[in-house]
Length: 121
Image (cartoon, rainbow, N blue to C red; front, side):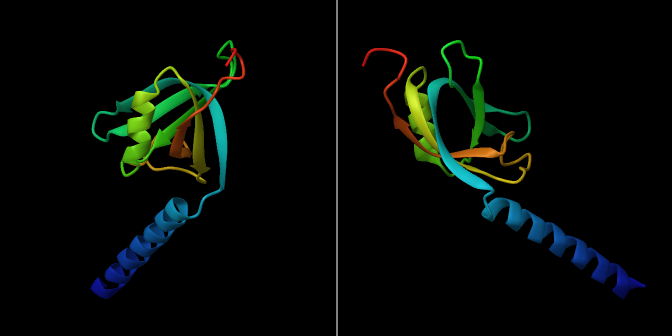
C-alpha cells in the first residue's frame, strides 16, 4: 500500500514537472509589436509580477497586454524609462501561464524605443 502511494505521488510530480517544463521552455510563437507604452506595474498580493500594456492605435481601441519575467531586468528598466513613449516589444507567446510567471501568455524579452507612425518625426 505504501509503495503504491509513493509511486502514484511520484507519477503526479513527474507529470506536473513535464507540463511546467513544456509550458515554460516551448514557445507557441514569437514576434514584435509596436505601440505607445501606457502601463507598466509590479502587481499582486502574494505573488508579484510585472504587467504592462501598449496602445496600438490612436484612440487606444487596441490594447496589447503583456507580462515580463523578473529575470528580464533590462526589459523592466527600459519599460520604466520609456513610459508614455512609442516602443517596439520583442515577445514570446506561451501556450498558457502560471500565476507566478504573469497574468498573460505574452512575455516581453526586449524593449527598444521606436518612432511613432501617427505623429511627425
